[in-house]
Length: 219
Length: 206
Image 1 (cartoon, one colour):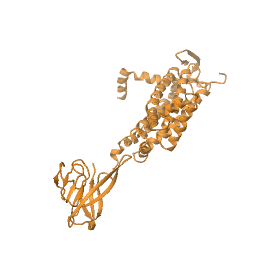
Image 2 (cartoon, helix red, strand yellow):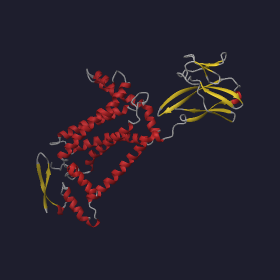
Image 3 (cartoon, chains in turn purple, blue):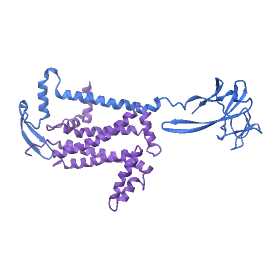
Image 4 (cartoon, helix red, strand yellow):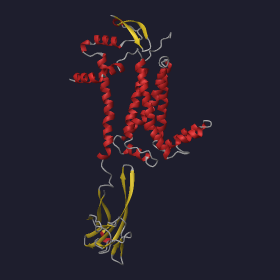
């Protein structure tokens, strides 16, 4: 019965071809370090899902941000779980992205023909750090406020254009409502859009080129 | 059954080596999934479960657990405000005003207090002004001092014997009835009860 449905759908949608191409592709014999990319993808999706749920209560306003998160943590059913997953998933994702990059580097998997995969991967690393940086401000507590104050003021040290970049990031000379709202916007719209777009390119290249084997001693 | 393993790349096809599925040796650095499947299927044929379907089953099972662990709480998370009981400050509630022995007969007395209403994480303060007139024994008139015209606060004028609204000169009698002015209806009343000599009124909030 199920098979009949799948066949019916497959005739019209060609799902099996996608499944075979994406999941049944040939892979060299590799080790557990090769699961780090999948782990990162899994975490990215988890972050997206829990992040979407968090917006059901979170308010990006200086007077309400902290209280709305308190409300999520203490009053909303399973709010602690959703935010906890988002909080720890963020840290874990930075770690897995980094380890994934180290694996790629030490196995020389960035070489021809996978240079573009590597470049998109580096951009994805930067975007992931951007997610961490913008998300860190959103609770609007002392730690968030001062971490962002320090983080944005680092850009000020760039010669000539530094002060301008600092103000552009903050939306003014100091941290304010404008900073919180633009960080929120970047955190839930701009960076994720770029991030998932690039993940698409990255995944396409992985499927198209296949993954590299572990280099042998004489290579 | 020697099968040629070719690592397919759109750019070039690399012939790695000739491979015999029946002699899977440790030397193999690249194992074609097809060979692996065949050999595993051969090994565990008696159980009717090959490696591939086992892994698929485990992945589906674990995926289901992960989806449930996130999915089910997520439903509760979204429905939370409509399921949870409201805080004690909203809905219907009896509020004690004071001992009835302190209330003089026929003399309006004003009770003022502020209540905080919480919706989500937002607390809104709301002030009440209540006029209580003892009519004798345990019967009272309990009025809100909010004018029924445009919600200004009326006050009892001893010399006039009337409640006067400062905004549009609306006047109410001691029993709350309309004497003159633009107000559409008499002063609003609260439900009350006497418990152990204490007068309590019922706050009904929108």
